[in-house]
Image 1 (cartoon, rainbow, N blue to C red):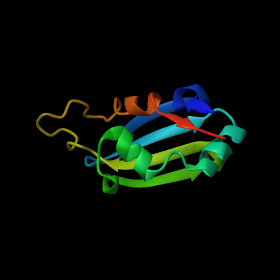
Image 2 (image 1 turned 120 degrees about the vertical axis):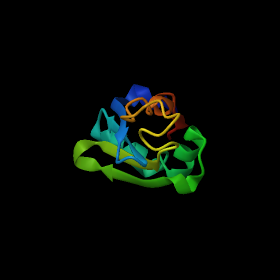
Image 3 (image 1 turned 90 degrees about the vertical axis):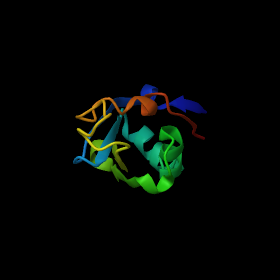
Image 4 (image 1 turned 90 degrees about the horizontal axis):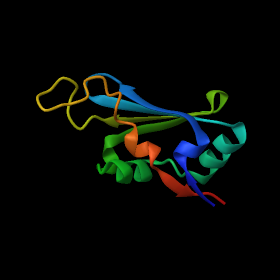
Length: 106
């Protein structure tokens, strides 16, 4: 079954995790879907790195929080917050690639 993350998540957001890292949060709509996504391991370092066009080493962590039906992804910011040429000081606009993320679930 082909799914889009935006169709099964109630929240997809991003924010700074300090000046050199970003945190991406995904809150899924149901316990059942959270467990399916976690079991299928579709949100992993490789898939996120490909989605953002960065080396896998720049995806620092992916943590699942069952009580909140949440997935927290921490990655290296492409440009430090506030540096010359950086256009999103708060990191609040970096979730867009996740909105379009599609994947297969059985």
